[in-house]
Picture 1: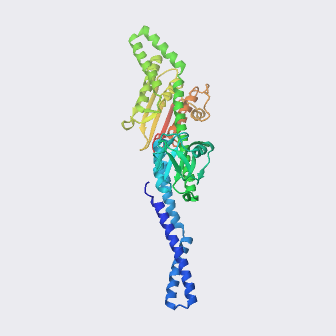
Picture 2 (picture 1 turned 30 degrees about the vertical axis):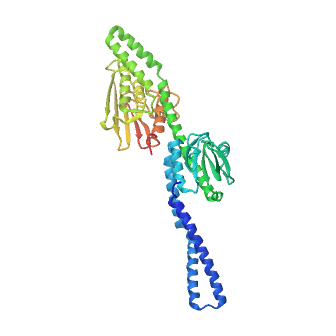
Picture 3 (picture 1 turned 90 degrees about the horizontal axis):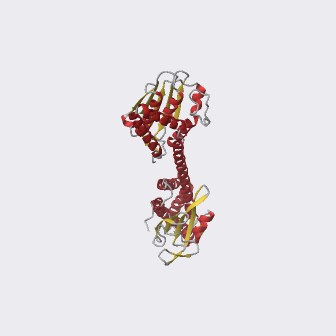
Length: 448
């Protein structure tokens, strides 16, 4: 079994020293009583009194000044808790379970520590590892009871268990605590002891406290996973919402070019195939910003073919140091599409400028600007509002764009945290600037 930690070793030493102090004080007190009865001379009596005073002072210091000892225990416990949280930040697995067992073993008097999921042993460290190896089914009825009922159980009467190799083992004593996520038991933390007297209040509190700590971290991981899955689902929802008008208009445009310009029709058809293949392939959470720019350019190719090359003019500026920066798929193209659909005037060219640049060391700014019809303040405010789920078809630019813009705003918050945002700056007749600020440190994809 692994050596004891400084915390456990210090606790054992302090307990022994404390017992010696108490016994010494009692012995000196008895000695003084006998010497008083025998009429002993002043020198031995004085020495004994001084020694007794010192021992009593040590006892008083221990009783009245426990802060230093408590601070030491607290520091050790917080350090252990920090290590355990780091172990399990990726969820409950065989690797994280073994790391937990190895961290806890030196901190307790247990001879074996194990972690299970609902059916199998994930990790086992200590004397019984050969009998309860990782991957084996749960062996003890007590563990199954804890998982079924979600309560801490202890036993001090030896139980006989058949190990994985077929031999029977006696477990003298143990404490088993459930690991829970939202009131559902997902596993168990098990401490087995060689002696029944080792199952005391301290060990019981340790097991219960550690199980609650692990359960809390598992719940946090579950929430983070749900946020990521929700964000991924919203990306796929955007993929599924292929605008049928855009689809039919593009196909009609290609069909018309087959008669007037077959070479361009073939080029558009290849681009169209690449565009939708990329739309379907972009199922990952994040893609390089250059890939999103490329997809946006493909979209504009079809719109320029439809309206005329002189009706839509676009420029793209991406700083060199952010070209490979990961961004959510479908975060720029819908903004450009929104400008094409709602900002174009009846005559003249629509100028669209897309820029991606660093915003300090740990943030990214995406800006889509057009010189189109613009929108009033109420429409601009509503564009990324949480309530903007229903399109306002009467608005000059916000009509039909509310759902897509809301989707972008929600994904930014889910991917990059509360310090990220989407902002609209517009006025009627003066164009629109949409700015996305992405806080890279707050991203759910950043470890730590």
